[in-house]
Image 1 (cartoon, rainbow over the protein chains, first blue to last red):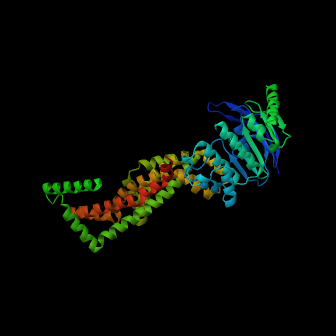
Image 2: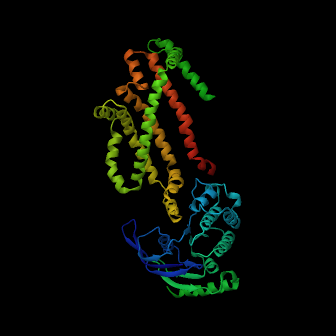
Image 3: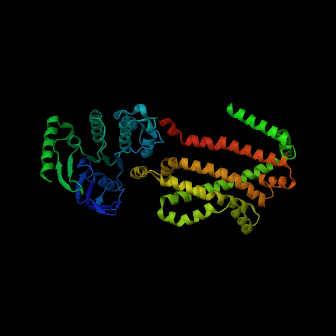
Length: 236
Length: 245
């Protein structure tokens, strides 16, 4: 089971009629069980790349080979819940086959148990984000895409959610691709880190982290971040 | 309570006006009530009401179904919108009377012609409203449904219909009030029963109590249907909004 990505070029016509290139060469592969983290300056085309990988945008040059019959789940930048369905209904609609004990476990990890019957409009952004995460994990995906799931949350909550994502990712073997602009998230969650250039996005470096995720100490994290920072600035 | 008071005031005004104008032009409420009871006892009132309601139900269902489907399609597809738009503008501006008369000429004085004419009159407003609804659909939820591989039925029921519900309710409400008005004209011109036919008879005989008896019974039925069916549907459709507020 393997995800192979080779996007040679992606451009679109903007409102003023100009052709704009968003991606000019991203190539990488991910194995089952690996967490790939894509890091790049904001607005560089990360979300465009994710939309291509999720099959939402077929208009690009290149090739993306997904494992056949792979079940896809995605956590969008916004929670994208159905406002007219309760939290539990939102999850069950995406994952109709989810077992009650599995759902209860996910609700437990994400501390959503008290909110099952609430409507999304009654939740804070942090809670709605967690529901979106719960929905993605309830699907039991083979391929999980996370688009800045921790953005615009306060540090304490982001750190907790990051732990929860790590727990859930470790709970089943799947291909995970996370987009973030936080180096901290990248080195704490990733097995492989892909650094993108500013727009049009190009793959600058692919870094593999050898220390298993669970064993990374704060010192490791700091060292890795320092390494990445050197890489990042050495290429302009 | 305030509603009852307002209704009582209406009756009182009517009574006073009837005394002033004389009972030949405007009969008092008691006279109209007596005629209504007599018509109800003979069964004629229910026969005509039933015939009218059946026509309303059929024409309404027909035009809502076709109109919603067309409107949705035109809101989602630019090609469909370009093709359908001239037809829509034509139908929107065609007077109801023209449609009814032409339908009776082409299809004869038949039930099919009457119902088709009523449905065609209501159709364009349903199309226009649902087209707006389809244009306002949230593309981010479409993408969510696609990523999580929602089957068509689930998308329709849980993603599309809740977003379209306010538009469907608006189309139903404005459409129903349109159908109530047009059905009487269609009956007056070419049907041997129904409230519209009976009003035509009362008009020819200058029988004002009979005319008022049928008109008011009809109005009462319309009010009941609005209160029992249309309003609860609207409230149910926006339940999540109320709770979220």
